[in-house]
Structures are given as C-alpha cells and as structure tokens.
Amino acid sequence: MMIHSAARLIEGRGKDLPDWYLVFPEGENELEGGPRYLVDRKAWTQVEARLIRRGIEVVVDYEHQTLSGGKAPAAGWAREWRYRDGVGIEARIDWTEEAAAYLASGEYRYYSPVFAVREADRRLVAIQSLALTNTPRTNNLKPLLAKLGAEMNREQEDDMNLREQLIAKLGLAGDASEEDIVAAVAAAGARREGAVVPAEVRAALGVESDDVSTVVASIHALKQETRTMVSREDFEALKAQIARRDAEDAVAAALAEGKITPDQRDWAAKYAQADPEGFATFVAKAPVVVPVDGLPGGGAGDGDDMDQVTLEVAKMMDITEEDIKKYGGVQ
Image 1: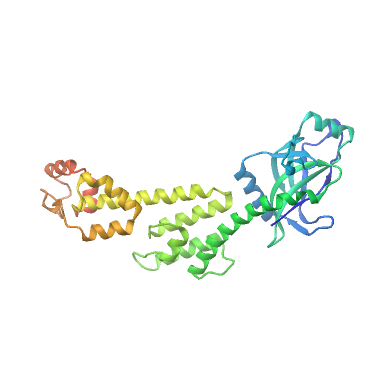
Image 2: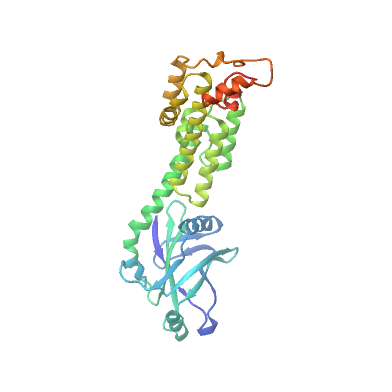
C-alpha cells in the first residue's frame, strides 16, 4: 500500500468556481516521477466503501498541513463524492470564505489529493484528504505511509485470510466470488439429508452452529462487511447473538427432558453459551431429575392437545407448551 498525492488545476475564478471538481480522471493515471495507478468502477467501489465507513467529510487544507500533525485550518470540505462513467471520481467542495478569496484572486490555483494505491493491482482504494497548493511536495506524505497504509493493509489481510480459508476448504478456484462461496456451501448442504457443515468451514467463519442456513447467513454477513466495511465488533456481536440463541434452545431442551430443574436455568444458560459441546455432553450423561415423561399426559401421545394438568405442572417447572411439543415428545 503506497500513499501519494497529485495536483490539478482549479478552473474558474470568483463566482464562476464550480461546485464539482474532478479529483481522479477515469483510466490509468501517472504521478510526476512516480508510478501509474488505475481509476475505474472497481476502484471506486473500494473508495466509496471507505468513505461510507468513515462517515466524515474529507478535509481540504492548505499545503497538506493536516499531515504534519500541527494546526491545520480547513480551506474547505469535500461533502459529496460521485463516480461518472467516462469521467472519473468527482467531489463537491464547499470552500471557506478565506479559501474562496484566495481562489478568486488566483493566489491558489491547484488542489492536491492524498490517496492510497493498492500494490497488488495498482488501483486507487482510499482518499485521505485534499489540499490547496501551488507547489505539491510528495516528500511531505512520508509520515502518513505507516498510518494509513498499515490500516488499509490490516483490513484487507483480515478479509483475504478468511476468504482464502473458505475457498480452500470448499475446493473452489482462487478467484471465486462471494456468490460462488455461498452457492458451494448451499450445494454441500443439499447433497445429503441432515447435512453437517464441515467443522473447518465453521471455524473459519467463527460460528458454533452446523446449520447450513446459519453458515450461509454468516457468509452473507461477511460479504456485506466486505462491501460496506462494517466493523469487526458488529460481526462479533452477530456471533454472540447466534451463541445465545443456541444456548437458549439447548437449555429449553434440557428442561423439557427433565435433565435440569427450573432453578438451574440461569446456570445452564451460562454453561451452554460458554461451552456448547460441554453442555451437550452434560445433558447426554446427566440422569433425569424431573420425571417429565411421568407427567399426566406427558410423553408421546395419541391426541393433539395436552391436558390441563400437564400444562399446570409444566408451568410450575418454567417449561412452556412449545418446549414440551418441541422436546418432550408430544406430536
């Protein structure tokens, strides 16, 4: 990941200053004395995703003063961005009164963006800031290299490592798309009844459930994160929500089977969420401490409804009618 800047002439004077400015022309661009880089729809997808994720307006300063870490008054703000086919990436800039005066008098004539280029394909992937300048100096950008470059590399490496693991486990080609990955997981689940998603795939996704729909939903969540740069914290929250749901189901089943008592519900919920496999082993080995099958009307029956006595006893045990139907054998 390399950080660069390039200057462009500001057309118009005074009241004739445009609202929109072409910051990056479409196609292959070349820095003076530097490498070439590519601006296209694919590059714009990366740039736009980062702008949305950061959720802030891009500053236009004077002479790249923002990079120095000192006082850096704004000359304006790039409030909107767009991509026009055949043209490139444009920004709508609102200038301060001082900057507008400089531009009207011709004291400043160029603006210079600070941006990141991905080394793998030389595409533009991020915009850091803009600057009014008459003498662009790329040497001033060196301090930003470690800051922005390292951040971008970490984000892309995390996404690529997870993607590569999934592709390898599913036996797909290295250039497989997110749609290919989702289709492969769904196909694997459909090939056999009661299919179990391989443990390696679940581990790569970071989910406990082996339900195919849960894994596919997690892949879609990962795809959404890649497109919109959703934080890792949100993805971890999704995993926690899935773990809580699975724990609640496991505890309800244990109650309905009579393996735990109602006053053990809280303890069991914490156990099931912290160690799902351990809790499952406990339930399998634990004796029946509440004879649910002995309840009036309990166990498998010929009727469609449970009698009132069964419901009253189940209520005292904190077991719902739905729990009994799902786990207690009532059809």
